[in-house]
Image (cartoon, rainbow, N blue to C red; front, side, top):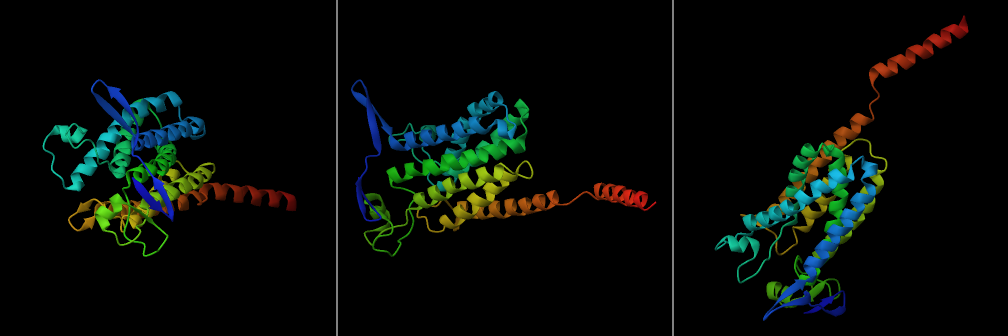
Length: 291
């Protein structure tokens, strides 16, 4: 596939390699490899920083083993609910049909991971807010790397940029938008934003004021970007005339922003009893000195 991005002409093959299986062969796609690499990097970060978040790595691994397949199923379910295409059978869900497996929604994975992860934390007696703080940064790692799988597949792009060099063009973009110019590389915007968020939230996590702060910060950071980005994407999942991911993103951003403000404000309030005790002790010391 010929791709032009920012004036550079590239040739991309979505298939990384093929494994012979008798008279047939099994194609291994770059999309899956990139997603797996993003997951691996996120898992390495989790292991290296689990102690700092007061998380037991063995218990964390138990949670990951259960949560990952559940989040993939949720990503597929979310996509099919809002994609609007009807399945002819259960085989379509798992990709056993002739058209193959396609269609995952990152929000479905996020929702599934946090819901299932919360239940697993309860079962394995892991402090949920701290686990969610660590998971939030891991999600940004996975999303930042995983978006390059969209580039290889030439999907998740936006409207025309109106520029002669800024943007990208390929057979996929032309088939959807027509041969009228370059389109926004939305995958790149989100990748940069997520990877930048990793550094920002990692730094905040070293001096966080309360458990759950990083999780709420993730909701604000990712929500605001995804909300605006969905407005220019050409493949947004729709709910009638509403871009469902954009609506969900802004809702999450607002809710997390309000909660973050409230909890941060509470951490700055000095308890009245503590202040009164210190004031009384100081006053008594001054009286003793005067006497």
